Length: 381
Image (cartoon, rainbow, N blue to C red; front, side):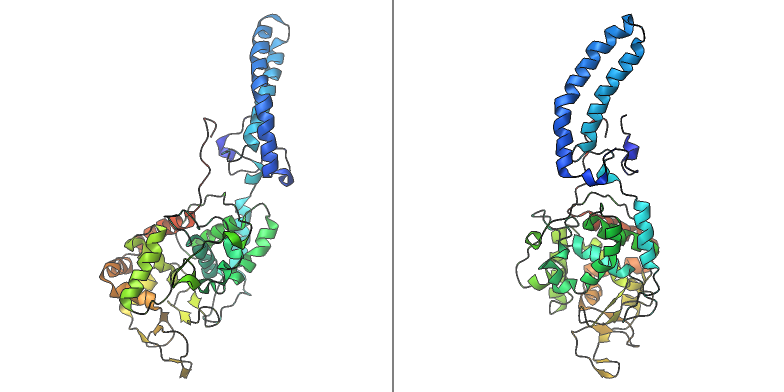
């Protein structure tokens, strides 16, 4: 039976067990098909047509012979690497994976030292963000495929402090769905988290493959090597910090508007002294996707933090509001200091719908960096 395109994301219909669904088996099918599909089809043409006119029961014979050809060819399609039809590898019930991610989001045992009422959603978003954000458009390296943050040196980059904890949170889901790659799981979990926190729906395309060792971590040279390919919080002055943001994000393929839209993710979660060295949430709704981040930037008063809970502040330079409850990084404040960035901050602060639309689009673009979806092949795709 030919497999319809609608079955691409459906349950696996092939008879191979998931244990056999490996590259070696795909190559085996491919070789088998090349040897048998053509002869089977020619035999079907030669035998079926004359028999259908002369022999009793010929119609059944024709169907059987044609079926042999179709079966051989379908076997080739199923096992063909890069095929766009259903295969054992596609036998992932993403609804079931989503259910597990939602359970993780709803776990009352999850706590955060920087704010009350926390859930792991912001952390899952940060994991996916920092994985995909390694992409370089000039060399086509890094990106959301590979999950190289499992290894040193990437997992030890300063910018990735605390993200091993996020990986550990997802490990039980990975064990429950071993056919799902780590890189697909990280992106999918972030997409589910964004939706669960009231954000826009973001399209997900599976098919990312994991890399095998730290030798394949994306490399980065220069003064920011401790942060890897990811943006730092402070380059020493507003002008340098703005230039740094453009340098990092332009390398990924983002313009000023997209930089400001992506920065809206800082409206979620908080910084921690035992991870980044900074402390506190950016907004009073750190588990809700909204435009509050931009409103806080423009409407609140921000001064350099000097104390923390009655003691001198000894961490890196950051800003705080008059209550001391909220914080901004130098890379946040520069968005209202730089006139080109500021106009988009003002736009998103004024219009939540525009922000949600832009945020969904730019996060989807970010999550697809370095991931090439399987191309359609032939009419059956």
